[in-house]
Image (cartoon, rainbow, N blue to C red; front, side, top):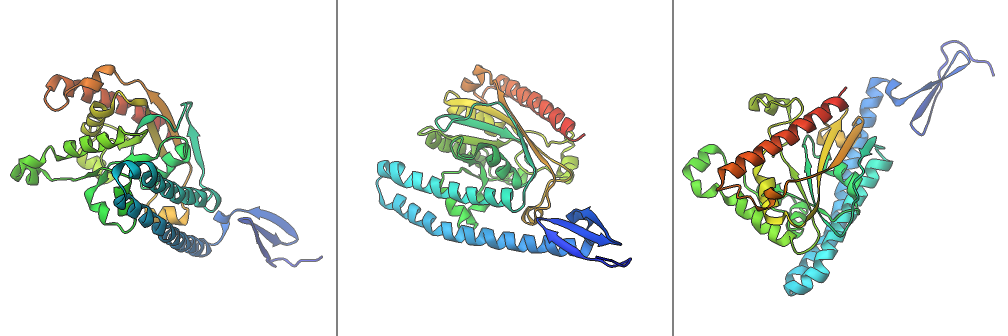
Length: 331
């Protein structure tokens, strides 16, 4: 077969592109496609992904509402035995679908490094840094159906998200209120509200094996927040020790494992649209088992200043080690 100079043929197969130029075949990746073509393909992936998530959520939402209805019309003891497991299973199927899409459609490059023995029959606490909504699914990558379903502390405003808000409520996720300093100055009685919410949530968590996840920074890391806080850490915001302190006070003796999880993204942390388009670089998750001093299980974080300072120093040291881990991964 003879080919003239400048004659082009494009063949696409399994994300690989071949160019026939002057009788030679050259291997190319998607990154070498014209920019406009890559942008259109990325946009289409994003739209298809969002539509797929919506359809996936609507279908499972039917089963979620049926499970919630069963929980509402049955006595608490029966609801705990039958309705609650159904709600958890619907949630896990939903998460499993998202993970399948990430693995097989977006083909995310996720590296998980840990040597922790995981079990569905134990109480766990996971302490992690927070940069993106994707953080939650990265934790699921390593723990899906290997530990009890993860419970997150969520901003109260998120309860109004359709379907998801009902799911979080049904899964007994604690909804936390964030008050400004000005608001608390006018309403000091609200200062301890999050402690009460945490204690109530932990009472429910104590009934069956649970995994409590605490993003210690309290919000997602951004360069703007980092500058505003004047954080002493390179990759992290300042840790907020109160939430984990309250959980340890309430459930400390039940926790079989406390896990320190460090999540690192190659390049910038992905936005929701980046996630939908699959425009995410290599992701690394390192998990290590933490030895938590026993004295923290019986401390009085609110009323005992010595306990409070000691625990805050411990979380600061934990955050310094995490910053060093992220710094090494960033090189």
